[in-house]
Length: 256
Image (cartoon, rainbow, N blue to C red; front, side):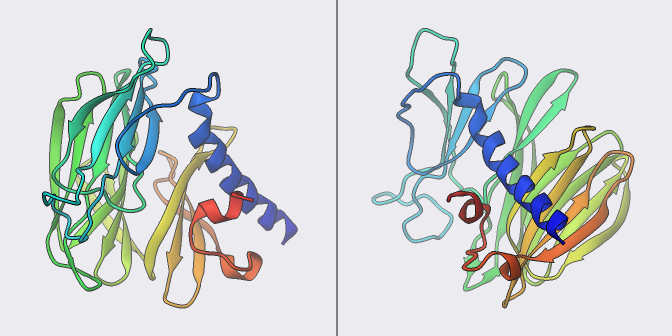
């Protein structure tokens, strides 16, 4: 059991380090939009991409003049002469939460998959949610996918499968498509996904670990999503049993 606890700690600490490591070579202050929620490095050219959630004062998933601020996308060149970031795009719809854009590498070029949230009435999704893919180099939109009464939190492309996390009215789903055409029965995640992380081991095997809240407790479930294996559940663990006062997010565990 001690080995399992250590494994979970390493997963969560690795998540914190990997998301902070891209700016460790120098200390800079960047003036960007409200509520920065993601900082990514384009592995193709080293450019830093910063996504800001903006302000949706009445939580209606639409920009309203006055208190609202649109979500925005900024770029920063750490090798350039200017320390000022550049806003490259604003969005009319707001990002899902947790917001973790997908990085898609094809033929040496990177693209970003950006998930947007759905309108809600109470706790139920009532509208459509978008998932848009943008080319990182040109910032041009490559594709747009619509989901009805649900939200797409995550989409992973690999050699053999496309894997996505869908937040629904009811139990959330882990969907798998083989070779882009054959749909495999989804894995039902019993509850609501409140956070997730992806990580790799020393052999470059990739894993997905969502945290699921069932109304009473939070559970982490670890899946192997390596290309050859498709999706394979490795283990799950009740987090509240090991981390007293757990709030439901990874940040609580490694923030000290």
